[in-house]
Amino acid sequence: MLLQVHHDTGQAKWLQTALARFAEFERHERLAWHETGFLWNDHAVASRIAVVIQLWALVRSDAALTATHGPALLAFAQRSGRLLAAPGHFTVRTNHGVMQNIALLQLAAAFPDLPEARAWQRTAAERLQMQRRFYLSPEGVVLEHSAGYHAMGAKLLIEAHRLLNQAGLPGAEEMKRESDSARTVLEQLLRPNGTLPAVGNTDGALTHRVPMLPQDAKLAPESGPWPSNNTPALAGFYPAAGWAVWWAGQEGALRASQLLTTWAKHDGHGHKTRR
Image (cartoon, rainbow, N blue to C red):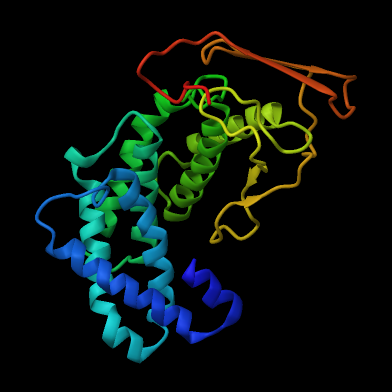
């Protein structure tokens, strides 16, 4: 948030505050002997990577900032990458593991001179190749039993494809097909106002847009227009995922009513809990 304000205002004080906060956290994390709270949680570590990359992009362009903050940023990036790549820290079965692999690919792209960068790319590509077999159903549904988590998964898959493709790693084409199928299902689920049916652990008031790859492959995925240019079919059946969707209205017209039913039951797995 501080970096966003710095970007929007151009005021150096927000970057200085962000760097001071980072320095405090880096020291705490480096000196910690055991985990407290979510210090080394899989999702938390993966989520920090984007912030570290944004900081590095600003620091490396300024000689004084590089001298002051560069060593700690690089050391933190390396520690985080080693933790994300550790087999014992890998969360295989859920979106957390997908996030870990995306974070490794992001690290390698932003810090190519770190000694483990190429190894992190190979590790992430191999893991994603394994995960894609069960993260997504054959119909293109993210198997977390939640419309909201499907929307998040569609974004993760398109980001994974972008990073694999950018690095020339194996699995990029397969990931492209699967991100396309997940996006098609998302278009079927999204209502005219951008909300999703409250299936599973889904916030029915939150609005979404369809993720799309930008023209510049170096940029992060962007959100396409909604309603989408692709009109969803009147019905969608996803037996492996346990979902079926029906829309009222004529083909090509704005849908007036949506019915989604689910018959999947996976106790202790996924985000099927209803709010």
